[in-house]
Length: 306
Image (cartoon, rainbow, N blue to C red; front, top):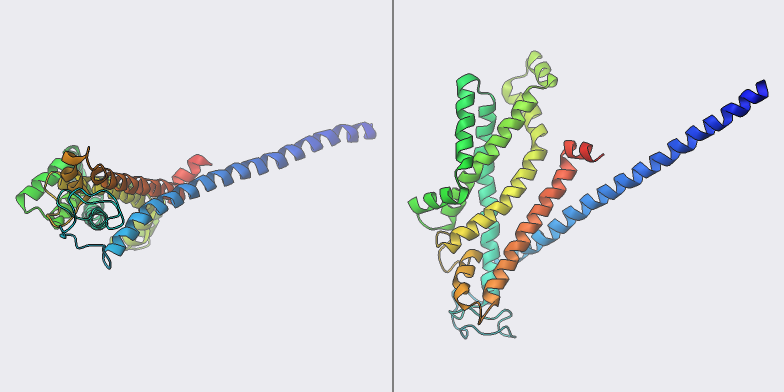
């Protein structure tokens, strides 16, 4: 009997051990593959966006020609003197692209900073509102978000003057409503946690609770959203410049370059293709960065993929 029991127990124990050991490496390999995919997405986004940022940085210290230099032959083909050719005024297209990349980066960063300052402040304050004030602020933010961002930016720019600063302010104000609503939702979710109640019970003031507990818990999701807002801001600035409401000449915004080149697209396609390609690459790069940051920084996204 003793020998039979030992013989019966051995396969059972042997069956459990291999099953456990084989499942764990498989899960580890799958997690490693997912981590590699997240890294590749973030790296690809950094490369694409980094090239545009590098081009913008170089434009501050070196340009092939002056932005307003019209000494070149009009609509010249790409060659040794002009790498991408010239536009209908004789300006060097590569120079225009370099200054346009500077304007795109400045517009994106300025708009995101404006949206973050206004949106985070308004979102945190509205999260502490109660009763009718809470409902009023929520409805106000929903109305601002429902209003077309580009139309709101056009109204603000038209009321002021068509400058890059006006475009940045307009886009930032339009995007601040989206940031404020997101921050309001995130802060309310954090304030409902038990550790916030414990912190308040221990005598911690609300400003210290916000700085020490609320903001550190919402910043991963907030950073991802701001990265997406950067791409939208670049597109909005290009749209405003295309309509003549962006940076005035001799500033060569990509949107203005597209508008000026549409009449000569068949004879000189580089004038429209070059800024369009760079605009698409920058937006794709920023979106890839946002996607990579979402997987890297957002703990809920990591749990869903586990």
